[in-house]
Image 1: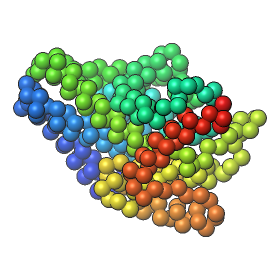
Image 2 (image 1 turned 135 degrees about the vertical axis):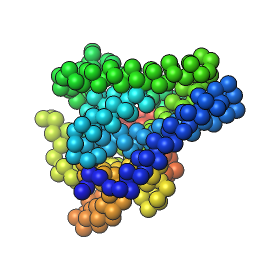
Image 3 (image 1 turned 60 degrees about the vertical axis):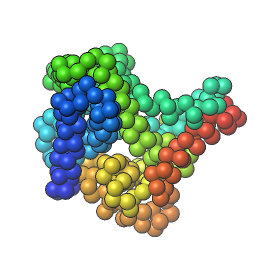
Image 4 (image 1 turned 90 degrees about the vertical axis):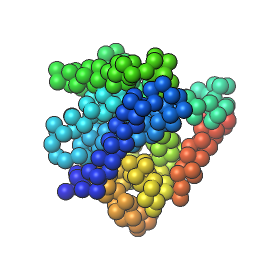
Length: 312
C-alpha cells in the first residue's frame, strides 16, 4: 500500500513522543528554570517541525491511509500543536510557486541574502495570521482560489486555532509566568520556522532549477512530469539521517511526482527518477548535502538582489 508503511508509523510515534515529552518537561520540571526551559524549547521546536514535515504534510497530500477522516484528524491535531490550519495548507502544495514572475528591482533587495534568512524566524507566526486573511478576506492562497468552506471545515479551522491557543498559552500559564511562556513560544517558533523554511527553500528557491515563463496565453509548454523534475532540487538523498529529519522531503522530486505516496517510499523512488531523467535527457538537480542546498538558496537570493539588470 503506497499510502502507508509500518516504519513510517514508528517514525510518527517517535516524533509525537518527543514533542509531548519536551512539552511536559517544560511545564512540569523547568517552568521556572530558564537553563532547562530554553534548551527544551529548542528541542520542542525541532520535533514540532518534524511533525509538520511528516504527519501534517502526509495528511495534506492524503498520504496517510485511504481514509479522509484520518487526514482530517491529523490536520486538526497538527493545528492544535503548531497553529497552522490544514484547511488552508491543502491549497499550498501546487506548482505555482515555481513559475517565473517579473518584479521591479528595489534597492533594499541588494542585501536580501543577509536579512531574508533572518526573517524566516517569523514563518510560523506569519503562517498562522495569514490563515485568517486567506479564509476571510483574500479567499485565495497566492494564485490558488479557495473553494467555499463547508461548515465542518469552519469548525475544524476554529477548533484548531482555539486548540493551539490553549496548548501554547492557556495551559502553560497555569504552570509558569507570562514571561517564561513568551520565551518558550518565541524560541520554539523560531526553531520550527527555520527548520521548515530551509527544508523547503533548498528544494524550490534556487538558481539551479528552471523557472519557466508562461506564454501570452498563460500556458507552459512542457510535460507535467518533466516540469516537476526540472523545477525541483533534491539534496542529501543517500543520507538516512537527513531523510528522517526532513520528512524525506530532501527527495522533493519524487514527492512532486508521487505526492499521494507515503514519504517512506521516496528513497526507493529517487534512483528510478534519476535514471529515467538520464535516459530521456531531462535535467535532474541534486546537491550532495543539506548545507549545499541551503547555500544554493542563499546564493539565489544574492543573485536576484544584486543582478540589477536581470531583475528590472
